[in-house]
Image (cartoon, rainbow, N blue to C red; front, side):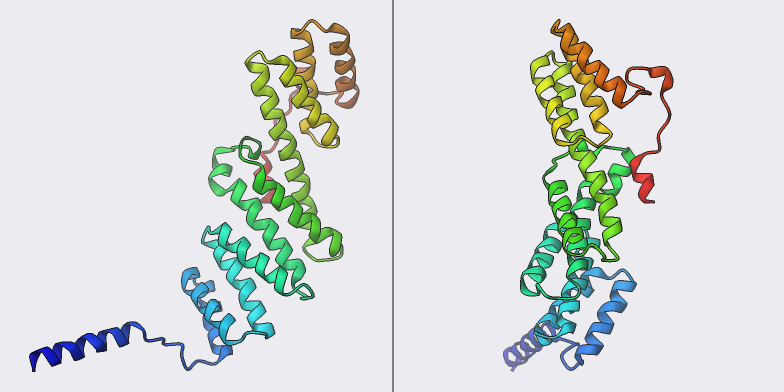
Length: 259
C-alpha cells in the first residue's frame, strides 16, 4: 500500500512539473502576458511565452510579431547570438514583411551594442581595439536597411551608426599601425596606415593614419615621402592636434553622442 501511495505521489509530481498554465490561454492573452513580462523586465519568461506563441499562431502576423519581440528580449538579456539567429530566421522566412526594416535595424543594433557594450562606455574603450567582425556585420545590416528602405523611420539612426562603425573600423587599422610603429616595424606601420587612407578616406581616423606614415617615413630616412605625406596631412587637417599639440581641443567621448 505504501509503495502504491509513493508511486502515485511520484506520478503526481511529474504531472505537476509538466503543467503549462498557459495551455488554455488564447493567443492574444498569451501575447499580452508576454508583453507585460517584457515591461516588468521578465525577459526570460517573455521569451518562453513568445516561443509558445510562435508555435500556436504559426503563419499569422501575431507569430511574426512574437518572433521579433523574442529577438528584442534576447538582445535585452545579453544573448546576441540567439537574437541574431532569431532575426536571421525572420528575415529568411518573411522577406516581404512590413517589419523587415525593423528586423534589419535590430540585427544591426544587436551587433553594434555587443561590440560597444556598457562596460566599454564606462572604461571609454575604443571598438577599434576589439575584434571588428561583429562591427562589420552590424554595418552590413544597417547598410542593407538604408539601401532597401531609405525612407524607413530607422534609416536616419542607422546612417549615424554606420558612420561611427566606419570610423571605428578605420581606427582598428590605425591601432594595428600604431602597434607596428611602437615596435619599430615601420614598413608594416606604413602599409597598414595606407590601407586606412585608401579605404576610409572620409573618416577622422585618417588623420592619425597620415601622422603614423609621416613618423614612419622619418624613421626610415625617407624624407621626400615624409614631407609629401606631411603636406597632405596639413592640407587635409590644417589644425591637426597631432602636428600641433597646442591646438588640441578636448573632444566629447563618442558614446556620449548616443546618450
